[in-house]
Image (cartoon, rainbow, N blue to C red; front, side, top):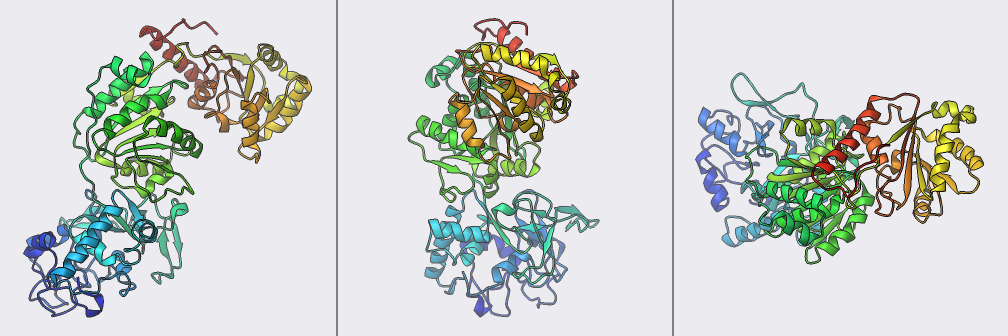
Length: 619
């Protein structure tokens, strides 16, 4: 690829494309500037759309385009761009590459074998550094500055060669939603559809005047703006994926449990998941999926260790993703201890390891948007938790981070309803862990009839039934989670409870409390006995002896999954496995019934498989 200033790339016949990809690009003539790598011999620049049908199809398939006659078409299978003849609009991708032709371009004449070898080496280095990544041009510059300083700011020619070799895909950051078939059979962009972000998959609703391309209304994506602006005129680079490796499943259940210190229930579930990892890919366009449905406190983290090891042992790359940063920071030292000889990279907002590569990656789900077909195994922890739950953008990012023939493992105590239906129909491979590590049944919630919190705050005497139950918990030495549905209820309720229980420390916290971290730490240290809070603490906080109270349990803000998660704060320790769970409500709703039924069902399964040390008692 000669210097852009010379304006010559060469002259190709369609049949020469395969040789060009295999042997490199050799210019044959200088009849005119061919910016994008293809000019049909014998045609001038005004007749670029006069091809035979078979030649036109080959041009469209293989990604070349004559100067001035392009229209971008997305290839939904490979993720590469295609261009169609017949319209004068230049593709945003090539506009981006050519905006500053003096920057990042190879200075030599690629007809010189030594020059071509040097460019090929740079292309190989670029592909290696971008392996498994999905990055905007500005992010490529940042990554190369950190990991390949010699390429920083000088990678455009190398990227074009890698593209021609089929090792690199170059997309616009925002483009038409997808191709459709015209009456003549050619792929055409549907102009009626809004453009979508190629990085996160969201509809690009933002428009702004753009200094980069000069448009008054350049489309950009607002959904993933925190990771950098993905625009219609920005360049998105992705590398091709290698075939995924398969995990090993040679050990028996007892061997798996013994090696990793798992309980019988954990060992059975891990062994089933290992069998799934060892299965050959099914050949679909999306990774195969497996669900580990484990009750709260079952020890999900320990169960995934054998799965990670089975893929790492055969040279695969593994990703463990979780929606919350605090979980990432908690898991990092545990994974480092279990896999001391493995290069582990930890990614979250502000992480110093943003451009590092490792065999095992631990990341928040938002960071997955920077990966593309990178991992042989992707484990999604707490897929039902905010912000992953009900966020198509994060689900899109997770799927694209995994190789198409790779494997997905979901971890959840409360799987979303669609996954539960797939389990019931037998279409989703899964394993249930119905018991906690200590072998005791889950506490079954008890209901007390009580007026709504809003009413009780105006008439504190109505809190009588709740106060009586709270006194029982206090007298038995328990710490208390008291969940409410509204942040505004916390302050007034704390004041009332402080007057009723002067012998203990009562505090409240929520997502709006700047001192939440300090209060949670004090609660863990038993300096606070009763903590009034919201669902912000339904996960992640565990104390050895705790009882759970959920006020307004009939609120529409509490679905069955959140009720199960809140109830799961009780009974987690072997010293106090029978913690109390109270649903306080004026009505007995479907969500409460479903939550209780799920807990009872898990206890029945645990008893049927002989996992329980004692049988569950009636609430």
